[in-house]
Length: 578
Image 1 (cartoon, one colour):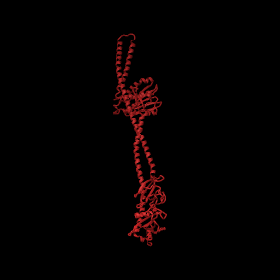
Image 2 (tube, one colour):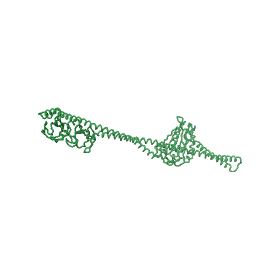
Image 3 (cartoon, one colour):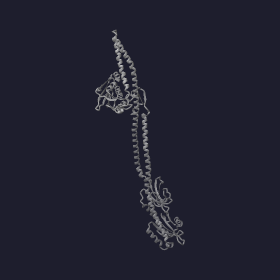
Image 4 (cartoon, one colour):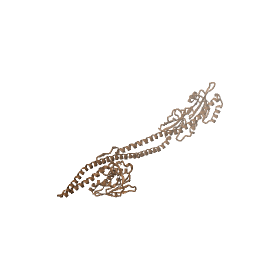
């Protein structure tokens, strides 16, 4: 509606009236933008914050859920490996303390013991007895290692220090990867010797593989220097250096995120086997762990973006509606102020008219009295030349005075009707009075104004002054719309409810459908600089306050008809409104 709002309009006296800034179109557009963005921000920020919190919680939960299989894998493998090595170390220790040096070196005792041991436990390769000089004095196994010198072997020194030692995997004198379990025994006579057995590393690999490795998961053993103790699916063979960073030693199962030499992010679970320097590790690419989140992320983004789009659209439409209502309310407020000013001007005109009428009536009364006295004097005298002419001139003065009296009478009636009050009235009288105000302008243009049906119309209770303003506006617009020589017809008829229906028709230029839709809006005018755009708006408001309705039918080039329906008795609230 504000698209047609004028920045200035003329009041009843033609003075410019400034439209306040608060009803300017740009102000409402700016207000609508600000309120829309504020509502979007208030709605979207909690959504984004909640999304961020949920994302962090989901990623944390997802990481835990994805790390748990690796953790369980290492824990299971750790238990199997520690049980495997612990059983064999305990068995070797039991044998070393069950037999003395002489018994193990005599005859086939060592062979018999080894065969019994091998029948009960898998993984033993050979067994040897090493004296305190480091020479292997007894041996059972597939290699030619009798009298082998182990004096300089690291495992022997570790055994001598610790009493029982489980070595890393090494090549040694055999030239193939193996590991040693050695137990040192000191007899009562002070003699010390070492019983050693060799463990096949294939048993370790079988234990690691038996826990059920997934295709994208690798598990292996390495020592404290980062040397592989078993074959790795991704990182090399036994006794090769591990190409990924070795995590710090930990007796508890720990999960860490590391990066390999190629920059691939890995998730590693590891633990150090009790009683050894061996670290068990299970490794999986982090991308595999995050694959469920990656597949879900696009769906969440679509939902999030869709939600934000809905919020923006709803906020825009809601703010457009609310600001539109605010805009319409401000328009009505400005129009109400304009109507109040318009009514005030009419009241001023009424008071002015009353003053003029009183001031004019006094000299008119003197003129009428003198003219009557002159006629009486002339009638008392006899005949004389030009007597009849003087009498006719005096009679003309009297008729002119009477005409002036009728004009001042209408002015006085108009001024008295500026104050709003209800009374029983005849619409015919109001229409005739209104036509009287417009009669001279209509005659000058050759426009005929006819009335019909007012004699049979019922009397109603309404506000005389406000109805006169309504008919002034309607008939004034009709007079402006018709061409010279046009016609205006005012018809009246009773309604079924005891009210009246009045039609004001003209054969003027008519209105387009677009103009007809906006005819009752404030500040909407087709007269450009000649009109304020408030006449029909005020007319519509008066009719509605009086409990009636107003409709318009028009066709371009064929004229316009306004139809006013008024009740017999207006609403109670209409009595005090001007």
